[in-house]
Image 1 (cartoon, helix red, strand yellow):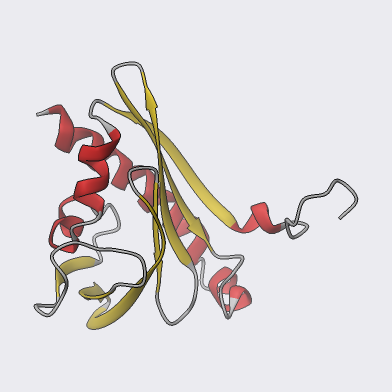
Image 2 (tube, one colour):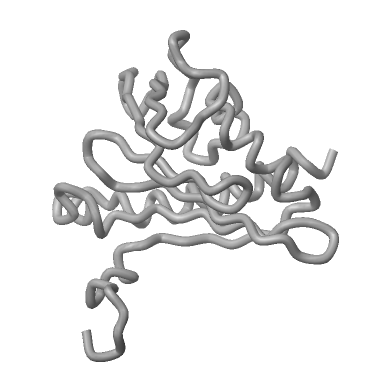
Length: 154
């Protein structure tokens, strides 16, 4: 591109994002996100039910972890950690290749947490758009961030 970046034109249009202040250090938040057994605690979509028993206790780059889910009917999904820069960024994707990402930035008194659903890299972005997945996930992001903030407020 002319400006020297390697960004795909319009790519940010396919990223649903929420930002919230959380009264905890980035490492504490990262530790929670890197523990698949804790994901259901903060999930705002209501679809994440429990980790599959063979999960690693702590995620790392390239780690695969399974989750029991329910969206209409129960199912299981396997995710792979594709970004892992402790304690700043963690992201995973599953077979659809859309990405769930958390960015953590220290600020006075806590952390600015950005959660992203990046569907620009999905194998079938049109299917996601037609099913309303991005809008549904944008609402779930807000609920997840609320739950994350509440988790550390107690």
